[in-house]
Amino acid sequence: MRVLLIKPRWFVKGGIYRYLERVKFTPLHLGILAALSEGHDVTCVDGDWDEIPYDRDFDLVGITVTTFTSQKAYAIARRFRARGVPVVLGGVHPSILPQECLEHADAVVAGEAEYVWKDVLRDAERKRLQGIYRADRVTDMDDIPFPRRDLLNEQSWFASLQATRGCPHVCKYCYLPNVPWHAYRRRDPDIVHQELTMMRQPLVYFVDDNFFADQAYAKAIARRIKPLRKKWSVQAPTTIVNHEDLIAECAASGLFNVQIGFQTVNPASLDWAAVRQNRVSNYQKLVSMLHRHGILVTGFFIFGFDTDDTRIFAESVRTIRDLDLDEAHLYILTPYPGTDLYEQFRREGRLDESKDRSNYGWANAVFTPKLMTARELEDGVQRMYRELHPFFRRKFAGIVLKRLPWMLRTPSLLGVLFSGNRRRVSVGEPAV
Image 1: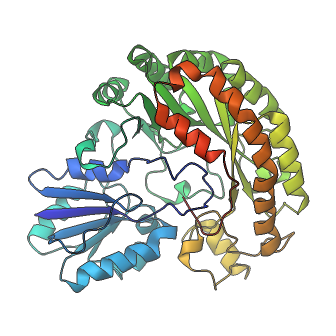
Image 2 (image 1 turned 180 degrees about the horizontal axis):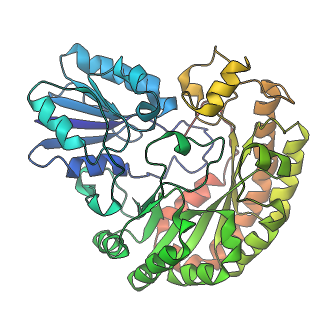
């Protein structure tokens, strides 16, 4: 069969990430499905960089769907189905709302695809797609094939990789507790090492939700990265503040940037959102420790919790400056349809039913906060970006000069950093 795999467009110019105009995050899930499609002619399309080939003939189309791309995905599906091409939807949104997605497709994969994708292909060949496909168990990480990177539009200087899936935490705003792959699992470090050796890029980003949930495992991966002389970046929980030996080993292996989910500077909001692992009192110690080991720190913050009023914006700006963060991404609390938080806001009559799904990308208020208006929430986040931009721009030269020798090995990264510091961020539409 001729199979087309699509990731609809995520990036929106002027969105919440300053650097996405120049950074391409590999859609690993498409590459994995392609690797599981032996014997078939597969085309992978990343809507952020590739045109969707509507004029070509395919026997099956697979589309990965998030809440904020669901309307785009349904429109893409309609165009192919109108030509008689069967469509299967998968990803986060179909895993939470499979019945809704089935209204727009011939089949839905609810949950991880590794153990059911070959069934989908077999049934599509027989023209007998079965509706909703669910694996009877979570995927063993060692069963995941290496993605078909040759089919992906991947830059020469930067690539993505996954070592773990899932997260042990149950934060109220997160979609993970509502999907089948919530359980934390690890991939054999030797398999991770093997994939790393096959990647030509000098810089690697781990897409794991919680890479450091197992400190011994993280050390094992760091030891395998070190001889490869690659630079790497990863998300990290605030609890690594208690493991400086781990941070030292990771830094020695090439870790140059971590993205930390601080989430809020309001302790009451941490309690409301069940972010039990965070302590505001530890934030400064954590950032200072990471900086001591030469690691850049990107902070993630969420606004709109029921315990936040308009004072949270000025307080957060002060804290970000005091912490001396190297970058900050500011999100508006967004309840994914089908999750417990969405149902809570719906029961309370606080959802803005006029907002379509494209607004569910963490950049727009789709509900009425308790202690401010939706407009105050959106304006407050925008004001923070404007106020923080000069601070981050002043830090830019120092960041580059301290790391100039290895940054010169990746001039594209220098271009990304330079372009991201030339302008202010203004969120007009939702992004990733």
